[in-house]
Length: 111
Length: 153
Image (cartoon, rainbow over the protein chains, first blue to last red):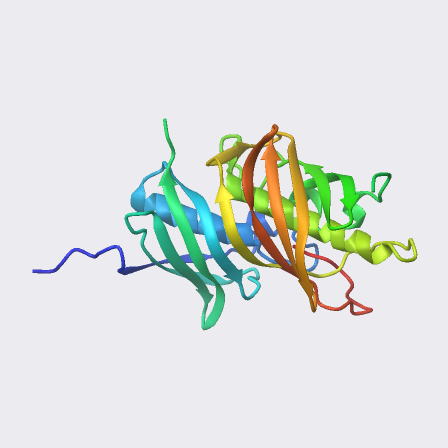
């Protein structure tokens, strides 16, 4: 019998970053770079798909942005968690390049 | 120090709805205070709101404004934007899930370390007078190249 994945099991999600992604608008003319906060928004989208629409990022204990993201990139998210205390670890890669890595804490919004 | 500063659009390479800082309130010995807001047509806006972590971009832009103003201080010269990057976040806490677009925001930055183009800033962003995000923002600005002197965040 297959066991249920635990909170430490890795899960993945791929995000194609279209040339016309809204995040590139004005950021920057002639030198498009995806804002780091868009990576957080992608992480949150994936978490809401898994956990429900009321979760939000309540804390980011640590996060490093290691490489810029250009139009046409394919971002691969690998995450573990959240554990019972809401903490998860994650990283984003574009191919073999590590784009970002860190930890976050998710909570459910109150009524 | 208070007074008149160049328009923030002249200190940042961001354009249009990507610009979140509206003006400088005070330039301090160890930091800066700015006002801003999230434009209603911001890339991450949904139903009039954005996740609170979007305010971290405001903090990163305030750091870019501070660094641009510091570059002009010795001679009072023009403060041209310079390429730079948001490279780290540490100890960030979102006090509320979302913030409304268009609401007045204030950001206070205090420099907590500078080394070789890396800058660390303790940031507090308030929305309508209440703290919504706080934490340490790290930026990196490579040395200026004559043909590519721009500042990003």
